[in-house]
Length: 429
Image 1 (spheres, rainbow, N blue to C red):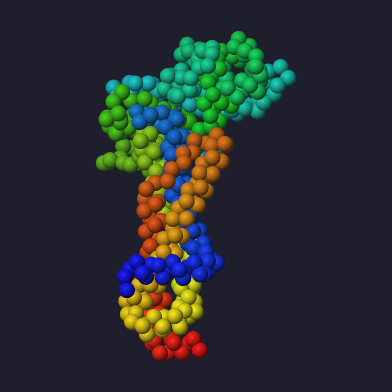
Image 2 (image 1 turned 90 degrees about the horizontal axis):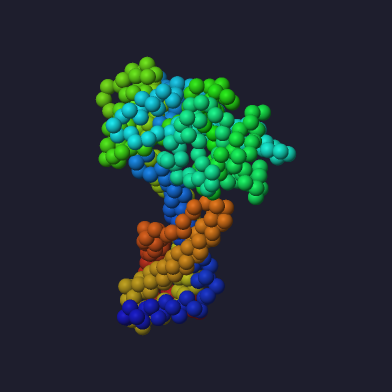
């Protein structure tokens, strides 16, 4: 019996039992759609996070941030970052003097230091609890923020502790509406600050909305508002991207000298030595680390999705088993008129594969539609979520569907092919 004849027989049997075929296909559709959604969401999350990291600077950037030192390498405290310090200990050893020493390195073009605080901000009857972002002058040259109108503060204003401020676009709208704020005074912690500029809209980065910040000179924030000498992080722009690795080691050497820390023997990772109270990491390393994290999350979700695929496969074997039972007489008749073991085996195996492949194709379409809706929803919330379905998702999905069709179709097919034709014909009676 030819393959074409067998396929026609299979399609006729599937059309004769539309409801059963649909329910069998549905199990695979759900499983395959889940695979597509997981891969697409993984790509979306990865592009979102990498985009957020890139917004701090390009591949020529190096970040230095405070880190809780640890006596034991690899402990949770060792990898705790400056952003987590609000939960516990505060590291106060990173200073502007450190940045000045780092700026003397031949491969460092510019740097800026940063510190975030929170205070009451008011203008007239408008009173807001807002974030203050204290930064040094080179922030506007290194960061991707741009002046909309007015100007950024100068190095002279920073060193003289000038009470000047640059507003993010949202903070400007909250305090001044459509009015021009340049030249007007706002109050921060009961101190008058003159507004000298407004930044272009930038959007949220990670969990921080930079449009809702008030930018003031770092020394003004330290001395006049917070009464501190330290900073939380520094961003350095390298002259030569190819020398970033060596420059990172030079920065670590300088900071260990300044902080009276031991110089470890041999190379260290981006986390540094256990006793370091700082961490030096390039933007490229940050992107690689986050890429590894999102890949791990995707694999974890795929392991969970595999359960639904197995459930769909079990559904197929159950349905095919029922099909064999219902068509026992038909099988006996076909064998009586000359159908061979391989003919019957092939018929039921092709039926199982067709069902799973049809479910796979429908699942890909359904999963793509869901993934697109997720990207639209994320974009509506202002997230840079890119809709994409990697080719490996299509390959894995369709391969899975064909694999499960063969795997879960073999047993029912063998059972049908092994039926005794005489006993099978007696089932008609």
